[in-house]
Image (cartoon, rainbow, N blue to C red):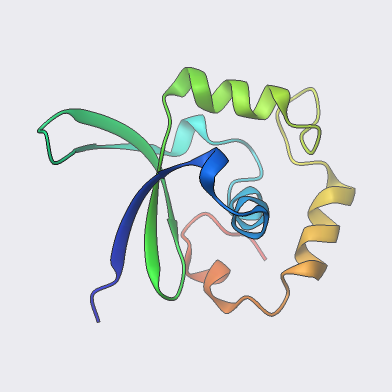
Length: 107
């Protein structure tokens, strides 16, 4: 089955997807960005996140990825998802089976 590919911005994702992305990338996003050509043949960098139905390519530059982590209270000063927050999100999203399909997810 071919999954739909969605190119979007982090801020446009619902809070559940944002939390799930944080679980898959608890050490930040910048080192996991991929590059691809968009429909206008421009090079775009994005964070890849896969669900059962879709593959999200969340547009962000390295600078934007670093800024998202810096501005997010869920991450500590070192840029890591806080253990208490991680535990809460793991409990909240325990029934989400596709998280383990993401290469970076650590159960």
